[in-house]
Amino acid sequence: MQVPRTSTRGAPRRVEVEPGVIVHSDAGRRPAAEQWLLSAHASPGQARREWQEQGVTLLPLGTLFSAVRIPGRLVHAVAATADPREVDAFLEEALEGGPVICDPYGPRYYALVHGSMPTTWRAAAEDWRVHDVACLGHGTYLGVPRLDIADCPEHATASYWSVPMPSAATLCPPLSVARLISAGAHRMAEDAEMSSPAEGHPDPVPEP
Image (tube, rainbow, N blue to C red):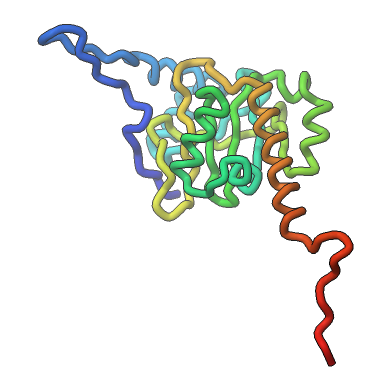
């Protein structure tokens, strides 16, 4: 399995507080977030080894966190771009810094949310299915990359953090996820309407 390249995006920032004194403002956040994610696995040590060797590990959903899978075409529609870096920046703002994993094959985006969302948002999740959006919980495993893998891979084959988890247990607000899906679905409907022939004006028939 290909090991994705790493990134410094989301790494601790160096802040000079006074002459000669430098501190890491985010010191300890990434290790804490890593430990929190790995604690979802029945064997955290095994999951950590998979991270080290393969760059990704399968974690069960529905307890610590769940995931909302959103197709790339919907995200690209509302972001008005398909450029990976621009999409990442858009998602970070739209989902208030909540963590998002991107599977470039598709692509598909996985917004990490509270573990109970598949239950508490069941009615909305049913409505989202028509847009190929799925709220994934118990019984589902998600490939979670190491937290330092935060750049779109050059050949678009391995999952990466579109928006890295900023700190332990920090997840996407469900309402922000719902608004993103609604806006994307609306934009796609508008695009489809604009690309279809106007009502009452059928396509011209070529002369014989």
